[in-house]
Image (cartoon, rainbow, N blue to C red; front, side):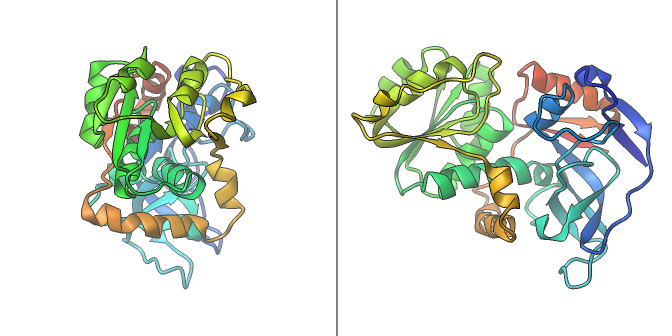
Length: 323
């Protein structure tokens, strides 16, 4: 089969499009004919050896896919030909991939394969951040940084689906702000000077939850934006500047909280948690409240260009590979 291989740690341009053996499933694995694979920030980091998961090279990256079941374990509930989405952790940038049965889900008819590939990492992270960690309450105000990317659009739609009263998107360009509005944001403000822009919005007296997959220099102003009992969710650090630090005296006056959002390790240590999350998301997918926006599609051989697009902060919605 055809697959993308990381053979050196020289960045997106160094990935290779190769012939590799088709994987063989273990008794607890589902073999999937990949119709779409999602690209996320961890894959970009892996091309430079900067992600915590460091497989021996050469290896095939790709943590999330959608496609058709080729084979599945007895009792898994899956049969050949079923449409599914799955967390595969590695090996997704290929024509065939293996996924644990408990990390494979029936893909609702409402979604295309490309949209299905946008679900696992971004939407399960957003659900964990907003519902599990922040315990989002009805009518709360949520602010989302990096709002035009995969995590950002997922956070917007998940917040709205689970009862947020208002979602404010933060993005660097008007084109990106338009993507955030299309994803369901009630307001969209520029990244530069976002705190002042938020204060000028009618009816906004403070933010209840900040979703921050960016980090960097905007962190302090995110804290300043919070109202009493506000929560700042640390999802990631796509900003290439320093990892921000918090002076804990900033947390005292308004009883604010900074929360880490480490979905992957948490979920993988708790069998059944990912399936529980997906079942909570399912009715919102079926209602149309959650509909992943796909920004760019590349064929499998174009994985280097797709990763470079993410590296250049050019993602508008989810970037996917279509083998």
